[in-house]
Length: 148
Image 1 (cartoon, rainbow, N blue to C red):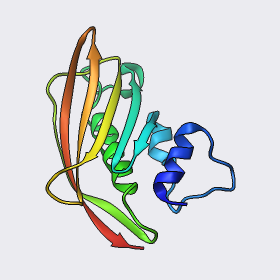
Image 2 (image 1 turned 180 degrees about the vertical axis):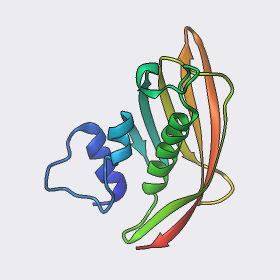
Image 3 (image 1 turned 90 degrees about the vertical axis):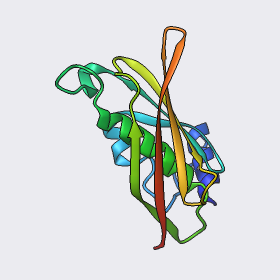
Image 4 (image 1 turned 120 degrees about the vertical axis):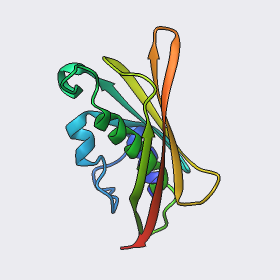
């Protein structure tokens, strides 16, 4: 079963206990921070977190930037994972993120998609809703494919 097929089954809740992936899924960081994969397709992954200041805040009371980076990195990583063939793996070698406003208690959706420039480059749009106004932060990551 391909990574994409495995992830689609995981998202739909149709994954059977004996069906395994060479990747740890869901990854331990998802369980620790409380984010989940809510959609997946070839080269695309949608990750969601219900960010709460009582769990995810920094000392000034906003959602910690590292949480936003982790959710962005997860979407990019899973999007990249859907493109790998058997025996391939990858690692992030560069992650850049720009924050456009502080975040408090909000549901965040992160959409990872491939960049146009290179098969190993992925971009993410992290969206959150404030009333009727949608805001976002953008992130780009360069990955490196490696053989296992």
